[in-house]
Amino acid sequence: MTATNNKTVYSRRKMLKATAAATIGAPLFVPGKALGLNGVVPPSDRITMGAIGIGNRGTYDLGCFLGEADTQFIAICDVKKKARDRAKASIDKTNGNTDCETYRDLRELLARDDIDAVLIATGPNWHATAATLAAKSGKDVYCEKPSTKNIQQSLDLAKVFRRTGRVFQAGTQRRNLPHFEFACELARTGKLGKLTAVYAHPAGMTAKTSGWANPETVPEKEDVDWDLYLGPAAYRPFNKNHLDGFNFEKGGGMVGGGVLEWGSHCVDLCQWANNADRTAPIEYNPPENGRVEATYANGVKLIIREDGWIPLGSCPVRFEGTDGWIETGDSGKFVISSPELLAGRQVAEIGGYPATFHVRDFLNCVKTRAEPRAAAETACYAHIACHAANIAIYLDRKLTYDTKTHSFVNDPEANRLRSEALRSPWRI
Image (tube, rainbow, N blue to C red; front, top):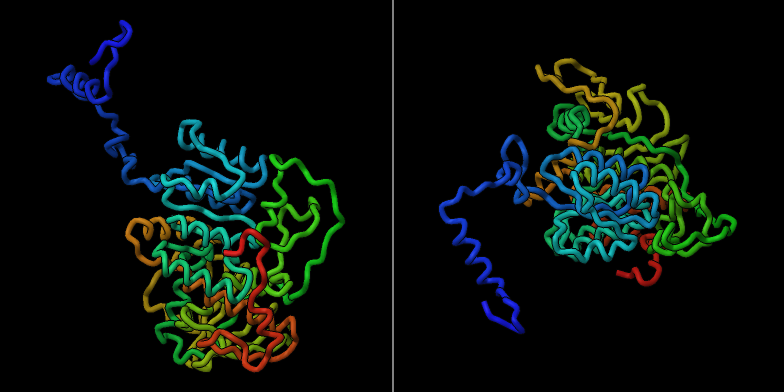
């Protein structure tokens, strides 16, 4: 303590010592929630998170995360003010305070060193770029699908997460649903005999350019930041119809179409069933009678077809072997060739496609540093299979893909579609 101009000034250290002396012998009260009592997770065990992109899907994902007691969101980012305000209100209500910060530019959120992980649920044009920026800033990532725009971006995404050691979970939540897991297990472990074919359902068979909509008056940047909304995608004039659900080009000017949209789920499951999480088919045929056929190096056929399915809900898959087959979908039910393949097991029927199990897998891996079900490397190859199929559709010819060089054999035009330029300044 010193005297300055008749004022008493306390140093911080002396103040702490005085406070400690005054409380010696007095009871010390610590809130139960700080100790993890009554089922409350103590702050030291919570994963602090930020959310980037809170539209329709992002709002759903955010709700799944907010239901986990060991997660606390402290920041959100969206280029739309209405989305920012809506997400903040939901988070503040859960947290019981008004501390959640809002951002328009994801770089400001990612610069914070008090955020452990981020949810990325922007439009597909942003997914890989935002995930890469997050990994480089030391954040673990739960990223919605499709996670990449093209083959090269898939490889780059896997590389950056290998190099940084961050945890990545693609939003292919069916990997953590019991009936899909069971079907893949039968195929992977030889219960169907020698696997011969895996079937995936697309939402269509289109691969085309999107074109431009008629220019409209650009909103105020605080309300909708059109430049940030476009991000790394090619520039186009503002049109309000592009603000919700617009499917930006994914590779060489192509809209991904149904192969990449549903394929992010269905082809991903086929990859898992074929023990092909670190590879992709090597031959791709153009569409014929509503189906695209690809072939893995082990001879298994990947058949992407629009019809011929047992009515088991959306996102159906089918796996066939020499000794049996199984088909399942989002109804939570499955049809199997032989009852004995169940081997006395009970499989939970969970209808719909809840992401809660997938979110929990991600959070557990953030804590343990284990690899989640839909890690970056896994997502990389599932997406490559979808992108290559799209290119075969777009060029309408058979393609051969070299999984070592990650290039199409003797096809310069197809190889030009493996990547695309990113708009400045997003060339990462």
